[in-house]
Amino acid sequence: MIRIGSVFIPVTNLVKAIAWYEKHLDVQKIEEWGDGVGKGAGFYFPNSPTQLGLVQVESATSTEFQVKGEHRNSYFNFLVEDIQDFYRKLNDAGVETTELEDFGGMTCFDFYDLNGNPFSVVNEVKNSPFHSDEIKKLQAQADF
Image 1 (spheres, rainbow, N blue to C red):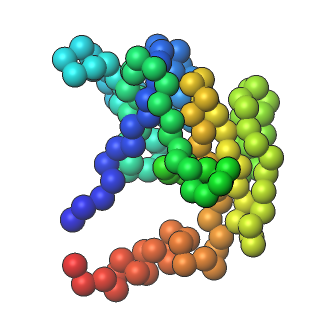
Image 2: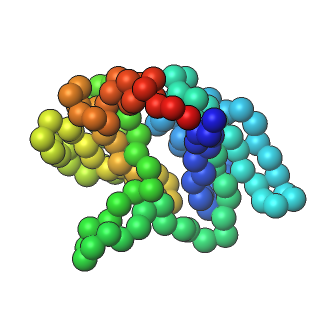
C-alpha cells in the first residue's frame, strides 16, 4: 500500500515558522532535526494521518506552480470541516487571505504563511466524487 506520509514546506526562519504553523494550523510538533542535510521540524494534524514538515531554506521557494497565463495553483490544499470558521480565525489573527469563492458548491480561499507561501483551503462537497465518503467507496471497490 502506498499513501502520502508527509508534505514539506520551505521556510526561511524555522523558529518563527514553527510558532506560526502551531498557532494558525493547530499542528502538533513531533520533533525537530538539524544540520546534516538541513534543519527542519515535523508535525502531525490532530485528525489526519498526513504529516507536515517545515524545512529551513536559504531563500524563499514557491509552493505553487503556474497553470496558464496568470493562473497559479498550490501543490496541495487543506480540507476543513467549517471553512467559514477557519476563514474567520485566520482573518481575526491577521493572516493574509484571499476572498472566499464558491465553485458549484465548493467553497475555497487561499492564505499565505510568513514566507508568502500560498495555500488553498477547501470544503468537501457532499455529492462530489472527490468527497472523502465517495473516495472510501472507491477504495473499498478497488482491487489492489
